[in-house]
Each structure stands twice: as structure tokens, then as C-alpha cells.
Length: 569
Image 1 (cartoon, rainbow, N blue to C red):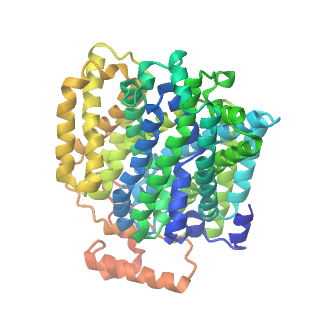
Image 2: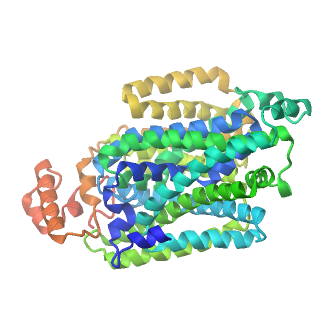
Image 3: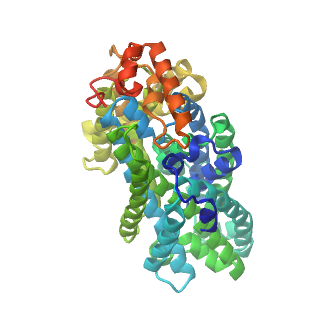
């Protein structure tokens, strides 16, 4: 709260409220990315993975999550190149395709951020109820109220600055807390004693557990790739960091996330070998339960600080993401960038934070399983990954291909994920065939970011061929993994088939003129920049003539994709 008050301005800037002026330096941006990715839910979920799948559980959770941060940066550089002043990915999709794709991406992020808020409040309520006389309900109120208070006035600026302090607290606490729990619980001898007591299975003992990979690792690879591409909290930091610092920022966050989350997950492994039963049968209680059992009082406080810091860093990111979506996508682009009123935008953003906090508090009372929430939302975003990435590179992607690709993927994903239709007979063969294609799509996307289209096509094709004899008769037993892979496959097939024969030749320079500042701090400089943009558009032929530029804003008349009813704006 002190840090938030120290940076506050009497008159906040709407763009600063959303992206901090697109010029955050390396230290703060790397810390913010790390803190946002290391949320309380990832700590609790890693502990759950360790308790459920044994020694390989935290590795499958933390390693793949870390690598997905690394996989963002090549795509991030492309996104910043075509949209240097954007606030949300949905705003860029509006410039690329129109309103339908914008609302799909914005809507999925609203759902994802509310679920993320909910899971972080659950984590905070659980540890407060465990380590204090207060109830779970009181705990979630305290956490929600605290995060809202320090984020409400300055928005993203407050979120990103406080992240630096929070990640320092998290990393410091992790280095101390984990070894102390390990030796207090018995040290290396706990593993031999756990095996002798029959607390673990052979699969849980193995670092190469197939059970852990198929149920945890493989679904999480697909889910976290979707988080990396579709999540507004990550995109917001991508748009905020200085463009030349994208690579070192993401590499640093990769290392910080992996080490911290894998280390925390070992608490779940220790609980498994010790034969500990989660309090009230809720695995979300394992982390505070282990801390309260094996740590001295002062270190219990340190563990408490670690968890509160992690959940706060992500909860304030979710509030900032939600406010940006409503400010830029729901209000800003609906009235047009030149007609948006910055004071009204700020009011809308702050109201959004209050409403979102109330909604998350309501959902938190249900105390959902955090790991299941994370995998579900990640798979949901999987429907968007290929259409979104293709839209930044391929000129032929159409609005129809994007929209129907996402909707078709969602229509197939839901019955597979929740087994509304039993995966047997002919339906099982269809699901497995799509899942096999999905493996190729996921690996192809990963290869594309670093090595380009030709390598991606080879990797994707080889992966699909290799999976044919392995996948049929096998993938039907793993509905979580199959659901994620089906989402990738269907969105790829529909989007590609509806776009590859398109005659559209989209001009990516258009995007930078549709997106941009709503509230320039220097009106004179902004006017000069607008004039420069007009010349640039005229020279590329996107508008057609200097006369057309003079009669309307450049972005109002530039082509923005096919069949776009909002082009007149």
C-alpha cells in the first residue's frame, strides 16, 4: 500500500493505468513477469502434483510451465513489432479481424482472470484459516480487500511495481522454508521410511513416471502454451516492457519460475512419503498444513509471507488485466480511439476492479480444486492459440476462419473434456485422430517460434506420424489430455481450411494505426505522431490517397480484414 501511494498521481493517465507507458526496464519487468507467473495457485497446484504423482509431479508442473515462458518471447517480439502501442491482445484482434474475434479473446480473458482471482482468494483464505483463528470467509475478505486497495488507484503501474517487492519476498522465503521443512520432517530418511510404510507406489517413486506425464505433464504442456499466448496478464507485461528487453525479461522469468515452483512442489512429495492426510480432505490445505506442522513460529510467518506475496502479485495482475480489457476493448474501441474520454476510461477501469473482486469472492466460497481450474482454463485458451498466432504472421487468415475455428474447437473440446459423450466406439476413434493431429500442432507451434515455418511443418508432420501407432486405443483413456489436444487440432483445421484459399492480403502496418494511446500525456507530440502515421499509411497505399487521409483518421479508413461491419469507425 505504501509503494502504491508513493507512485500515485492526482491525475492518473489512462494508458499508464493499462501499460505504464510501454517503457518498463529490465529489473522491474523481469520481476513482474516472474511474480505474475508464480501465483499462489501455481504453488498450491505444484504441491498437489507432488502429493498426487510423487517425485516427478512438481517437475512436470514447474519445468513445462517455465519453458512456456521461454516460448512466449519469439511470438512476443512479433506482436510488439506489429502493435507497439496496444493495450490488449483482443484490441489487436479487433484491428486484424473485427469485433467478433476481439470479443472472443476478451471474453475468454474475462473468464480466465475471474477464475484466476477466485483461485488466488481460495489460496489466501486457506492459509489464513489454517494459521490463524480467523475463518476461511474472513481470510478471503482480507486478501481481496488488501489487493483491491493498493491496485485500485494506479492500476497496472501499482501492480508491476509491487511485483518487484513480492518476488523478492517469495524467492527469499523459498530458499529458507523448503530446506527447513525437509530436515524437520526427517531429512533423507523420510523417503526410505515412506517406501517401507507403503505410502508410495512405484509410479510415484519414479522420476520418469508415465502416469505423471500423461495425467499432469502432457496436459500441462498444452494448457500452459495456451496460457502463454492467450492470457492478458502476460500480454499486458509484454506490451509494457521496453521492446529491446523482451528476450532477457522472459529468460530471467523462466529460470525464476522453474526453480521456485519445483522447489515448492517438493513439499507435496514430502507429505506423500510421510503419509500425511490433507486436513478436511482438501489438498489445497497441504502447503499451510506442512508449514504449520514442521516450521517454528517465525518461519511460519515467512511461509505466510511467501504465499500472500505470490497470490497478491497475480491477483493484482488479474485486476489490471480485467480493467484494461473493459477500458480498451469494451469501451475504448467501441467509441473509437479519437473519441474515447480518458477520465471516463479510468472510472470504468476502477469500477471493473471492484465488480471483479466481488464476483471472485462469490465464486471463492465454493472452494474449487485449483489444479482442475488451471487445466480447464488453459485448455479453453487452447481453442484460440493457432488462430491468434496465425493472425500475426499469415496475411490470409480471415475473420470467418478465426471465428469458426474457435467456436468449432470449443464445441468439440467441451464434450471430450467433461465426457458428455462416452469416449468409445467411433467417437473414440475420431477423438484420438484429432488428438494425434493436436500433438503435431502443439509441437509445430513451439518449433515455429524459434525456427520458422519450414521447421515447424516438418516437426508437426513427424510428430503426427509418430503418434499414429501410439495414440489409437491409448489416448481415449486420458480425457484431460485429449480435450486439450482436440482443441488445438480443430481450431487449426477449421481456421486453415477456411483461410488458405482466401484472397485477403492483410497489411500488418494497419494494426499500429488502429491501436495506440487513448490518453497521450503530451498533446503536441501526439498530434505530430498522428500526422506521421498519416503519411506512413498514405505511402503504403493502405488508404489510397492523401485526400482520404485528410478527411478521416487514418485507421478509420484503412482495411482491417474481411467482412468487418465496424470498418466505418
